[in-house]
Length: 222
Image 1 (cartoon, rainbow, N blue to C red):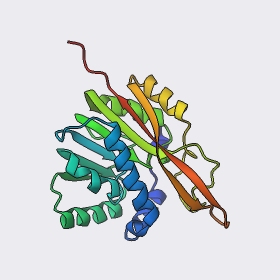
Image 2 (cartoon, helix red, strand yellow):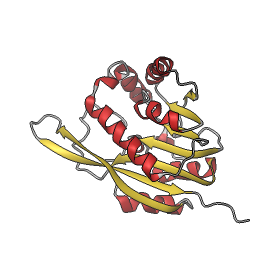
Image 3 (tube, rainbow, N blue to C red):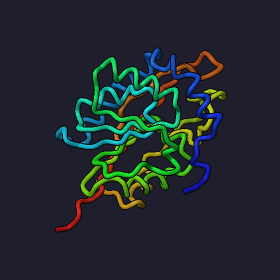
């Protein structure tokens, strides 16, 4: 995989420093709620699935999804974010979530998984198609992937202080093409949420759509 897919030390330190206050943002909590609702509506599930979440952060999505699945592997490159998540899981009594500190965009943890997900993580990944190719290998035949991220925007969503932003959102057709190139089928893209926020260093409020793309690894022929 492209070596630029590694999250550098500066990026890890940035997210570590913000971990203690990350959950104070009402905008982030609202986004997580809408992503969870959209994902549960889009992906078939019966409670027995094994899930891997890439870039789980403090677990705003993780904690909300965990009750709907058998087991969740929550992966992040920031130890500080994972520490906040560990404390949250203890408070909530969620014992089906396992944490992993890993450079997941360089090498995905080994499956098998029934579902692989991420929320607002893809824009930090240089070679998204390469990540999708890895996901295909780790999800079971008949399993799903679901990725939420910004629709293509003009570069004003993140301030200049945010490191490792590799993409200014994504075009739906681009995501669809990458997934199909990696042998996924049944690709669907829907709008999960719209974030309204102030453009950095201005008084302008702008809307930024968030997409949820889902796809399936076809079941093996009998």
